[in-house]
Length: 132
Image 1 (cartoon, one colour):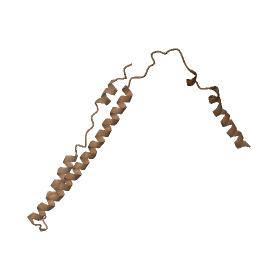
Image 2: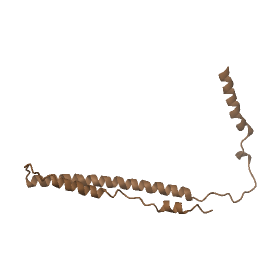
Image 3: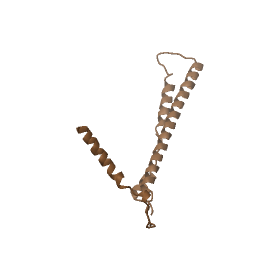
Image 4: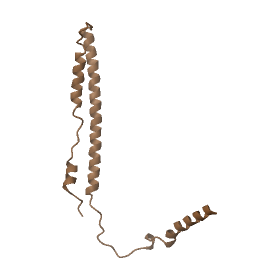
């Protein structure tokens, strides 16, 4: 038999997840703030070489942070896609239907009477032991 399908299942199947789109904007803002930090009206002074070295170092750190955030975001997207796909697969899996039988059975698949009654007898014995 075919699996289930509906507009809701199709909408779930078509759902797209994405990495946080603000990572690039936050990186740009942090880089702009870093560059403006050297505009010092109080008269602080750094040499051009020192300024360039600090900017390179701090910019590298900002890009590493943005890269880590992007990797973490992609990991989350991968997990969301996997969870969605597994859920949709569970919803749309074709049901197993028995289409026929041979008409025979064997004793090894039948539960003997003693296996059905023994748990009840054991429970009764435990209750009796607690009362004594």
